[in-house]
Length: 176
View 1 (tube, rainbow, N blue to C red):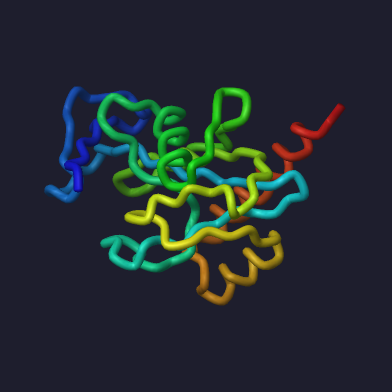
View 2 (view 1 turned 180 degrees about the horizontal axis):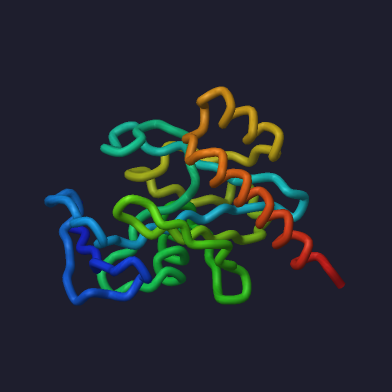
């Protein structure tokens, strides 16, 4: 397992010049690190979700969004692109990967990204140390999983915002 070094950011996402080692100490009030979520959505509106590996320290075995922390020197796009490829084997670029929003949390700035992609499950390349399995689900199935506690609950505001922004993105992608 490699050591992960994060850039410490201010509330605006500007690097402070400091770094932090993952799992070592706590960021002070007003200090943040960058985290990314990537939502993979099919052309017909299904969601590709992943179940975290059972031995993960955080949220073991839970169904969740693809994502992770940016490492030192990485911007949000680079982190999202890396996590998407590392965890699922999905390639992306500036045209396909769209930033939906930034959410300020206690000690992290969460950038949420989305990509419209119709990759079959059989073509995914799972990073087994991170991902136990992945599957396509409908929006209705995902909402049921969230409600039943079978998908990590990031909060009502998060999901209301994400579902709305993904609908907008899909509309923009398919307008001719």
